Image (cartoon, rainbow, N blue to C red; front, side, top):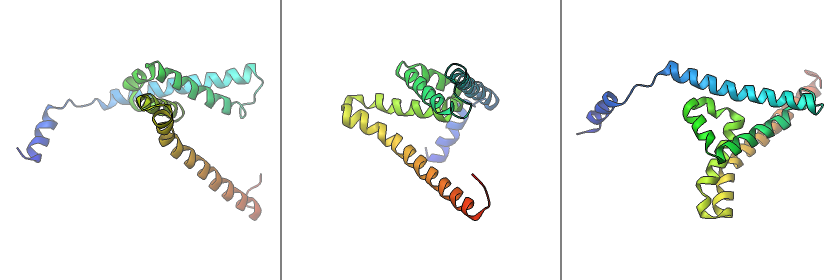
Length: 151
């Protein structure tokens, strides 16, 4: 059997995914995560006297913390299996990915296993965040100096 025959047989046997069903589940999952994030932001605004703008940082930290806890207890994996791409909402998906890699490599030790694998993933994200923030700040500074935009 050559590769073409194998591929043909595999396509015939493999179940066809329901795209509409998967999109709906991703929408519900991602929307629920975002709704919870909105409630967390409202909590900070209501009880800690944050403004809408200043509530974003503690909200992000709280959502990452929640996703890390859920990953540690094995719940986020079930959320991801149900919601697919909806479970990969950037903030909670990042927390899940970091903790998952740490849990996966814990047998290699705390420094080389857990620490090393956390920073393999998080390092590139942090580097990209710092670089893009620098680039945006530089562009804005240039535009302000040219008088195109104001602070």
